[in-house]
Amino acid sequence: MKKLINDPADVVAESLRGFAAAHADLVRVNADPAYVVRADAPVKGKVGILSGGGSGHEPMHGGFVGRGMLDVACPGEVFTSPTPDQMLEATKAVDGGAGVLHIVKNYTGDILNFEMAADLAREEGIEIEAVITNDDVAVQDSLYTAGRRGVGVTVLAEKIVGAAAEEGQDLAAVAELCRRVNAEGRTMGMALTSCTVPAAGKPTFELGEQEMEIGIGIHGEPGRERLPLASAKEIVERLAGPVIDDLPFASGDRVLAFVNGMGGTPQIELYLVYNELAQLLEARGITIARNLVGSYITSLEMAGCSITLLRLDDELIRLWDAPVLTAGLRWGA
Amino acid sequence: MSDGAAITVDEVVAWLRDFAAVMAREKDALTALDSAIGDGDHGINMDRGMRAVMEKVDAATPADVPALMKTVGMALISKVGGAAGPLYGTLFLQFGSAAGPDGLTPDGWAACLAAGVAGVRARGKAELEDKTMVDALQPAADAVSAALGEGASFADALARGADAAEEGARATIPLVARKGRASYLGERSAGHQDPGATSSAHLVRSAARMWAV
Image (cartoon, rainbow over all chains, first blue to last red; front, side, top):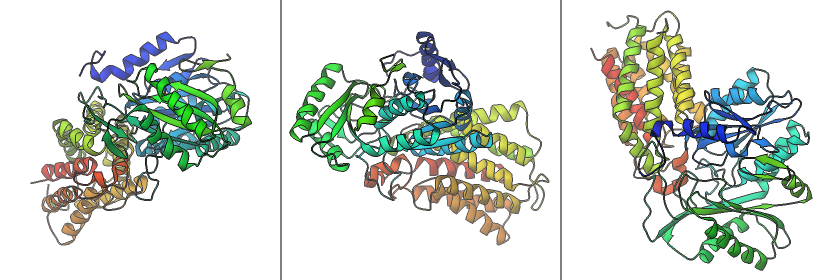
């Protein structure tokens, strides 16, 4: 294992300390229990937006804490859900009296921990809404699986509901908006290489030099199929095709096209992928009204990408364009 | 301990200490199982959780079993993370809630385990053969109760429970997972033993070892 670390056991805590030092103008970091909270929290009368999940997906979620996006993020251990006691303290830290929205990615561990946290917070008199994101079309949504995973749409939902909360929408409206964003978005990802959890010390899975995994999750969970390596053009077809067919996106739709890097893929390749995606969507009559290209929901050093499409309307465009000031995303502010 | 006599807090602590030692020893093996069908952290998380449990318990041992199990459950919930944290946390919290403050008999212990397993099933919404902890815990709880009902000693009942748990864990190998991250693999989850069922079988085996005499 070659990593820029000291002790595998200290990776999350030491990285958070660095994040706090680098972004002291935007956030405060509480060490135990761990959470990243916007510097001016709680904002009186504003719905608090809390998200959380395992570490190793940076900049998600801590990098999205700040004005116009998240109020607080709970980082777990690498690829491991945060815990209910941690979420409860984070919830209290951002409760400005208007309730708190929990954004939960659909993973069994996250769901169980967030359910317990919501129970605890309600016992303390804080109004909680929880919205589960589950946009990964690689997983068949059936009674026989834990259901579709929450992936790329989570980033877009956090931005959009963050803007809605910032302009004063109430908890019910913000939660409904979050559900709508999730319902209008779809994602599929792929991996060129595996990744190594620091505490495990060896790759989560093995992938041969000439192989790729289509439909990968953000923790290196195997996906739909393992195939021989193909061109970027073919990979984009394999990812965007199922995404388009699933919603389905239709000719005339306006979308936000999000090409996300898994952590180990350089920008030059992500823009190459975006070029292929733009051509594919144009051929299908789908208009890219907004885009996001970069590594925002990652899987440690995994190489690969995911493609997310979100169907937009005027309100979603307005909220997407609204000012945001976080370590990971910032414009207009 | 003679049959019918109260199970002491010290004995329950010794059971937990044995389980903590097993989790430390089996950390890599559990993580290897989890890498095959999950996200490769089960052994790491359980070891971290049980270390935290023993630190708390050794710093101030609670006076009775309900209080002890509450401490254990809350420590696991706050330190394990993942799905295993809430599930093991619930197991111990419900075990403790079912225990009265007046000391446990073997029958009471069996009822506590059954309550804990029911809690795990409710929290995880898991059924038998979903390829989860339940596949080890439910047969264990059933076997312990059945053995005591047939007049077996507590030691024999726990030994039968541990055998049933291990058999249940092994029986997860051909199953296709329907819960948790392993379910994303679909058919590819078959052929691997479930890590949660495996750690659960260790928990019951630790109990059998503790009360073997």
